[in-house]
Image 1 (cartoon, rainbow, N blue to C red):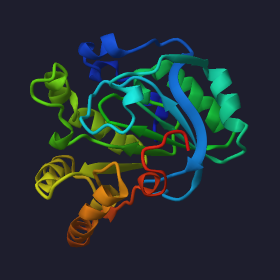
Image 2 (image 1 turned 180 degrees about the vertical axis):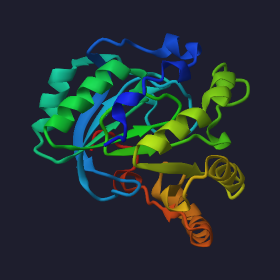
Image 3 (image 1 turned 180 degrees about the horizontal axis):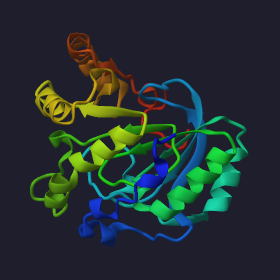
Image 4 (image 1 turned 120 degrees about the vertical axis):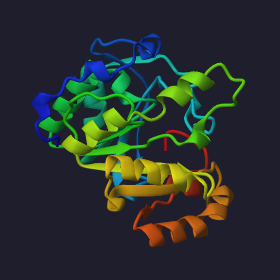
Length: 254
């Protein structure tokens, strides 16, 4: 749960260039799917969880594993009340609000989290960390996007993605007011330079930095595991598997 939750309404941290991508601030939400599975990444890996996946994203990661929420976003609507009922129907204490980018729908997200918190659920929000809103949450799972996420230089999304993929001001707000983990998708050992620059700039504790291999198959994940584990041992970071990839590959909704 956030500390000083009523203090923050940081509309000033949102760049106006996001607005064309934002679906609506009404209490209808753009979403892709609701499903019951296990948490596949980070501190809570392995825990049964209900996933509520919002649609639309302000970034365009070249390796995005949910392109149906970003590059070609699905446009389904659900009311906050319907979403709460669907989540509660699974009778599970863990809920993960993911995307896309959930903070593109701040007012609906605020209402959703309030109602889930009132029902006693543990709330994790998975976000790229570029937009801030004060909401009820137990864990902010932030995935700042490294340069390895950039689309091809000739893609029309490149400039916007490169400019917006890391927002230190927003990251500092989350770190100051929430329990956080910062998950970095690692492609090559050179990614460590950017991670450590951010770690130093924002004084991020090493214990909440999580490194995960980039890949959409088990073989791709395994190819990177050994040297990423060695980096974690050297610098005190947490290594995270990607259980969904290991178990189900790129299947969605399970």
